Amino acid sequence: MKISHSVLPWNLLRWGIGIGVVVVAAAATSGIWLPTLFRWAGITKDSAQSLSLKHSGHDEPEAGDEGDSHDHGAEGNASETGSLELSAAARRNLGLTAEYLKPLELSVYRRSITIPAVVVPRPGRTQIQVATPLTGVVTHVHAVTGETVVPGTLLFEIRLTHEELVTAQTEFLKALGELAVEEREIARLETVVNSGAVSGKSLLDRKYAKEKLEALLQAMREALKLHGLSDRQVDDIATERRLLQELQIVAPSIDEHSEHEELRLSGTAVRPVSSPRDVSEPPSESETRRLVIEHLAVHKGQAVKAGDHLCSLADFTQLFIEGQAFDQDAPAIGKAAENDWPVSAIFSGPEGDNILEGLKLSFVGNEVDLHSRTLSFFVNLPNEITRETRNSEGQTFVSWKYRPGQRLQLRVPVEEWKDQLVVPVDAVINEGADWYVFQQNGAHFDRIPVHVLHRDQTSVVIANDGAVFPGDVIARRSAHQMQMAIRNKSGAGADPHAGHNH
Image (cartoon, rainbow, N blue to C red; front, top):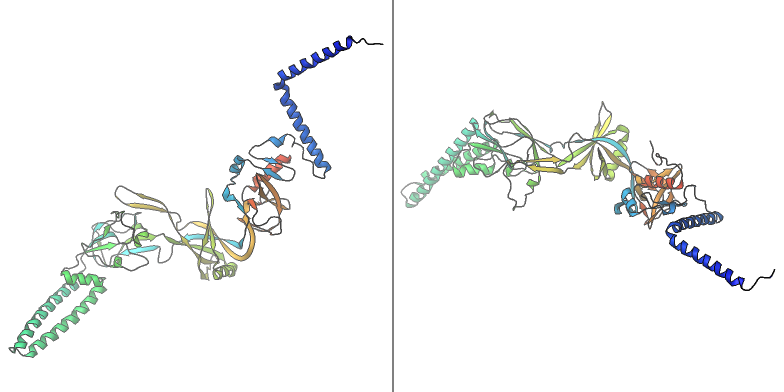
């Protein structure tokens, strides 16, 4: 059949018009069909990549991974190689701050044993008993139970009725007067003897009498010191010619013997218990000590005898931790003390464990308790104030962080390993027979299998066999959550007990 040349241009024109209409309609409806086309193209691309990986020898992704490569949720993206991509928000959710993203480094690991312990006072240092050295009547009580004072603070005022002390002071003053008379008579006779009016024997007799009085005064001084007066106070009595009538009891110092140990004469300048120090003056060394008034045993108007208990003070600045080890642990404890290895204390609380490291083992007991069969050893515990308040009357009250009677656990080193890769226990996860850490690689965290040499409650020792190297940055916490994220992304059911031993 022969086609006319006039028909062909007309057919071409109709085809051109039809294509133009389709193009215009497609452009007008691109907002509807174009996203669908892109999603289809993305899926096709992922399928092609999976096929390429399969033919190149790599494992094919688990079912359920399609379309997940664009999901940037808090758990991140998981790939077939065990790599996890975490957004900035996801890192914050997992607590992966700069503190927990540090390079690995070789360090010393000390294998330890855990021993129950209790906080106890330091014998002869923590508890202080204040007693009156002389008999009298309490006229003022400046102390308040629970208040905190510093050494040298006025606590009590006592009017003395001690008969022996009154008599000793009276005889001392009488002898001082007689000595003064003899000295004046000797000075007069020396002038007369030089003129020849009086013989030298009279002068010599007066000098002998003076020497006897000086010897008697020296004995009286020692007697006053036996009553509790200091050399300075005896000198004050001799200078002022005044009897000690009222006694001031001040807070004693624990580690030093100074004027705080002296009996205070009435009118001596001391700081009352509620009188604040001038803030422009730097605190003295003794003012760094805080003594808590635990118990008051007297009240105003009460008569007290020499040696009677007035109050109890406590210095919680330094305490002891008493470890209670079994007899078979004695060699290990002794080795730690011999090598001066630091001890760690674990205090359990509602917010988790508070670990205090670097404590010094003071000494090991020499006797095993017959009933509990435990050996006591003692660790120094520096204390600190957590709260300090002052009321309207100027009285100060403090709260200490550690208190006698607190229960805890001590971690005592028994063996030392040098040049080890040591990480926190939360940095390692185990699945079956395998252990993993998560190494940072840009925004990704690669799951790296490692060989675990040793593991305790807080630390894990990783073999330095080339799986990871010193200088590699790993996540030092949240390994369990990151492992669950990888399992969820791979389509496997999450094992809530993975990496945990019960």
